[in-house]
Length: 206
Image 1 (cartoon, rainbow, N blue to C red):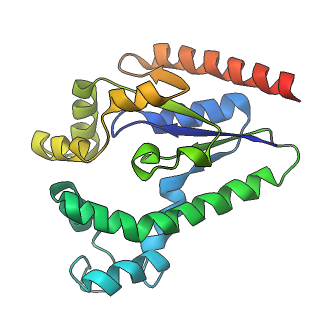
Image 2 (tube, one colour):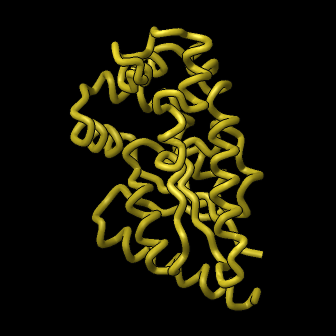
Image 3 (cartoon, rainbow, N blue to C red):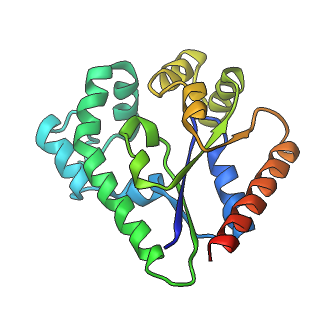
């Protein structure tokens, strides 16, 4: 049975970079849940239908497609709306994730599957994975990265971070933590060390 490692963190923590490196080093398939589920909000798809049934055209462009930025900003500013939207979309995202995991675990040669889940703890999906890796970065570093990457103000960055569980709390709940506040060279060394540890554990298991 393949081991499922859930990788999470916070906005701007660098979890995607860590996930890709660990996947390459361990030769393990990587599922990006955001990418996997992105199509759910395409016109006519299940996520689009769920939002349209409740909110009509409120979060749509004139052509009917989801206005993702408008929806994202509204969610960051309204905790109740965020809970409503999560209740609509999380079951769909979970089904997408489970299907993606199954597609890899059915292959006998696969012993480790990595899955990047930004809201793993917020969604309560801890039981969907065997172990959890949290990619940690200091709050100030998250602010800088988010403002530079998404070209948003500090206020918008603060709202985005406030919508997620505190990253230090996620780290306390994790099986593994990668510190990614400093240079990528340091982070890369820690990822390689974790990769060696995981590969060694899997060799003993099989």
